Amino acid sequence: MNKPKVGTIVEIIKSGNRFNAWDKDGNKLTSFIRTGTRRGAYAKGMALECREGKGGRIYWWKVPMEKFGTVSHVPDAPSEVEVPAGHEEIVDFISNS
Image 1 (cartoon, helix red, strand yellow):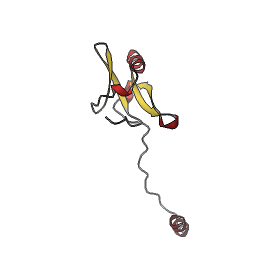
Image 2 (spheres, one colour):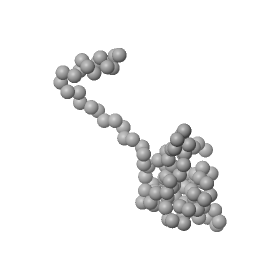
Image 3 (cartoon, one colour):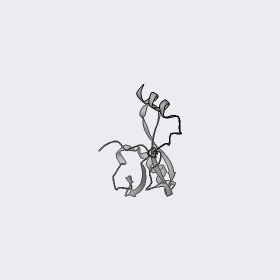
Image 4 (tube, helix red, strand yellow):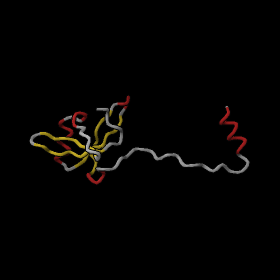
């Protein structure tokens, strides 16, 4: 399985003595999260969010369960920007440089 994407939020479900991590799509991400991190989130009734640290290393941060099923830290697609009158030449110059 591929590495989880930054912003993925998982729920921790206890199964016997194991604490499994599941995302909203039903993917099991247990193997990417250390046991102590999963156990701590479960004990506090929290979800875990995948974040990126220095050097591209991922880590898991406790977040409220209300965030489960959502994706955070994912930027929206850029919207169209209206160019003011008289600035077309400058924009064309920059685009063609």
